[in-house]
Length: 200
Image (cartoon, rainbow, N blue to C red; front, side, top):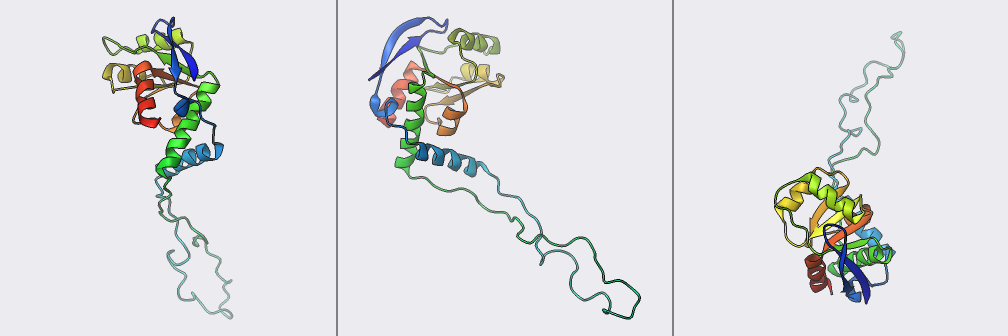
C-alpha cells in the first residue's frame, strides 16, 4: 500500500495515511484514460453547427438565360452550398461503467505515482474568503489544483471560485479530464476514504 503524508491547512505534516492499492495503485491503462477524456469532451459539444448544402441554398433552379446569343456571359454567381456541409448532430457516446471506473482509478493512480496527490486533514473556512483559500494553496505549495471535498461545503467552494487555477469537485463529480487537466489533486482525508469505499 502506498503511504502519503497528511497535511493541515498551514501546510505542516500531521500524520501519514495508507492508500488502497485497488484504487490508488492500479496499472495505468492509457487507452481507457484517453477514451474517458475523449468521451467527456465529445459529450460537452453542442453539435449545433450548420451550413447549407446545395439543395438548401436560394436559387439554382431554372437556367437564367439561354446559353448563346444573348450577349451575356454565362453566369458565375456567388452563394453556392457547401458540398459536405456540417449539420446539427449529437457527438456523445457511451463508455461502460467498468471502463469508466478503471479509467478513473488509472488517473488517480498516475497522480499518486507522480507525487501530485496531496491529502489535507480538513478544509474548513468560517466565511467565504478567497484570500484564505489562496493562502492554504500557497501553504501546501500547489498552484494549478483540483480540490476534492467530501460534501459541498459552500464556504470552501465559493472561496475557490474566483481563483482561475483552482477547481473544486465533490467525490461524486470527479472525472478523468479534470484529474489530468490540473497539475495537482488536493483531497481531504474524508474524501479519500469515500473514494476508497466507492471504487475499491
